[in-house]
Amino acid sequence: MSKLSKCNNLYDIRRLAKYKLPAPMFHYIDGGSDDEWTLKRNTAAFDDYQLMPQYLKDVSSIDLSNRVLGCDMDLPFFLSPTGMSRLFNHEKEPAACRAAHKFGTLYSLSTLATTSLEDIANTSEGSRMFQIYILKDRELTKEFVQRCKDSKYHALCLTVDTMVAGNRERDLVNGMTMPPKITTVSNFFSYASSVEWWFNMMLDPDFKLANVAHRVDALGGGSMGLIDYINSQFDRSVTWEDAAWLAEQWDGPLVIKGIQSPQDAKRALEIGATAIMISNHGGRQLESSPAPVDCVAPMRDAIGDQLELIVDGGIRRGNHILKALAQGADACSIGRGYLFGLAAGGQAGVERSLTILKTELERSMALLGVKNISEINESHIFDLKRLATHR
Image 1 (cartoon, one colour):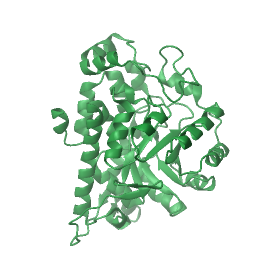
Image 2 (image 1 turned 45 degrees about the horizontal axis):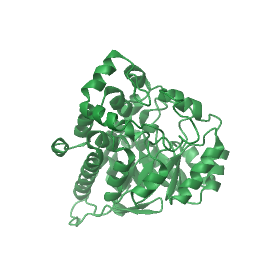
Image 3 (image 1 turned 90 degrees about the vertical axis):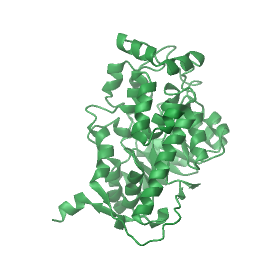
Image 4 (image 1 turned 180 degrees about the vertical axis):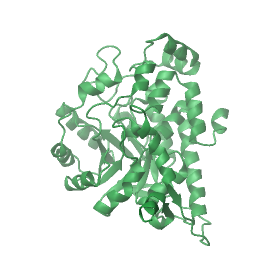
């Protein structure tokens, strides 16, 4: 706990996570595809936008509350769906869920979670979303929808950018498998030096993919590379017709995750989606795809206010959230930012990540001259790229 308290920003939390995790686990969170240009660009893109303050405003009280996906939240950001949290901490998904709901924000559960969607529903009564794929086994997809209805999930999130896994070379170099397995001399020493993680793994070695284990022998009775599993279950033939079919199955807020172009945003609107999570999968899929924050304004111009836009990717500071909102986003979501916290200290680590972002955002809003989320608009953004095009 004392080490967590000394973390002043998400970069400090990342360093603590690296210290605590075996190399395969850390680099699975930290890495991207190919040369990791997109991974780096997701965060670097925020540097292209400057914040334009407006002074002599009453900012004695800052209100971060927001409404998105039909949910009233105390923060304009929430936790993205991320797979297999048991890899990073024995408290796994329930720890992140409890932390999110303690802060009054939404928690998103992945299909590839190590906790079932029913167990998460019983963890907290707060807002929750389930992330889904249209798998080769369509009956399993239909089953997920019904289970979400039965467990009273507030929203469904369809991920569309993983028809095949990205080239995540760090996983190959570090011998990443699910469940964890010693594959090289170097990762043997990495596992051996991660005493706390190893101890908890011995006490609780259950790494099953809880939402699919009853239908699919996801691990084939043993260790399977993550990329092999993804390639064996995901369907490359999925089209907009399949997304429309899913929208018909679900009668609540539907998010399409992975869209980046205005053209796809228009299609999402046509098939019945209510929101878009602008994402390139954290730089883990198509290398050289644009940073999510760069996609907001063109997408908003194309669809107006007909869909909610959520920026997912690269957020490491509270002012990044502010820049996304000023560009026209309705909310943001964070993945690595909270996973590093989970790895660093379980639920307490996730809470530390959320506290840091909340504090930074409150401070930045006061310095910008806005007291609530609805006041943030494009007048607060000084866009260096747009300025260059008008010279």
